[in-house]
Image (tube, rainbow over all chains, first blue to last red; front, top):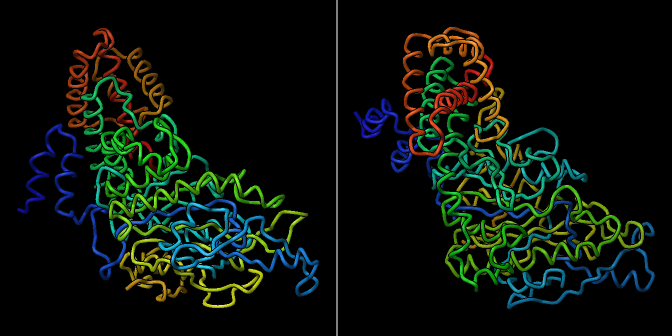
Length: 451
Length: 91
């Protein structure tokens, strides 16, 4: 009899809640616990991920891929190929840090962190509409529903803290496609993202409603026994297993989540770094500081969604609508990078900053910009990528990728590589064949890896 | 499981069953018929009766008046039945 069996037999017959058992067993890296920490294919440079996603399509030529030629052509009334007019950026750019990376005034605080950023200026995706492109950057597929990146990471690595989900999504507003964005789809349900909103009750209905703690324990214990018995009669159904596991996770979260969300012990200096006032339970600063606390608590993948499917980065009418949106996230993100760095977390935490597509260098109406999936910018920081680097190039107008292209599949392959995975081997059998995040494509961008 | 709607439904079910039958055994049989469409087995009856006793006891010292303990214990059991995979999923 193993230690595991021993512990189980000790507690299973009693009314003691089985989460306690799981907690004891988690330390043994229980092989039958789908969330137990697992080793990747090879030692990765990142252990966890913060994925920042800007909804609506952030302009590359106004932020991390400045194109002075656009303003020049506009000013001088010159046109490009096919008599195309260009729209200059309202934000000037200058070289930043020791690396001299060109970043505009749209993100003055993030620009201060230039030497930690690895900007990918040659991103491109397969679809030019929000819904498809949003799914594309999250799941690799613009056509069919597929598991999210965060779900693949949980499936591959498990998670460190059994009282918290492996994949947490801090999203006050719903993005395009709603919860499909963080769905585990055909991967087991335990790998789905758990959405946290903001405000006084960040996770709805997490708090106990039963009149006594003892009564809740009795209920969960009996429910577990009912479900185990039922599962034995219906072997091999991952959905049943997921529901059983979700009650355990919820119970763990009841204890742990209030601690993670309690910012009272954060110093004034730290709150200031994120641009937050004490007592704040909303805003992007709140999302960022909670993300750092989740990383410290052993959550594997935290996604921060900036704004939702409306009033977002979709600047069709006027590109200057980027300004208040940028002001809202610039300081918190710079604060997050600084904070992670000073706590020694940045070296093995991969921070990803992306959007679903860029915006057209040509005007839409007078001052707006359209969707643009042919070329856009994202950046990575920490977790084993080079800082102060711009990878890939667009042409003088940001119209097309000129050098070292990075398709969404390449981006995903590189993120998985940082975590220690060969993206062609992280597979799951579904509907009669093996599936992976990168479909049948994707190349790791080796040039951006620090080692 | 902490959703207010869910709580109301479980309580309503408990009251409905409580009004229709007088003994715990009859109430259990009725509850299983309504929720699962089957009769409870002997060990399930035993388990449920033990649960009800413990659930009533768990309300001691919580400020819930004792005349409500029975209804609360039944509502608690109904929550387990309604949240269970046997009820939620289709064979």
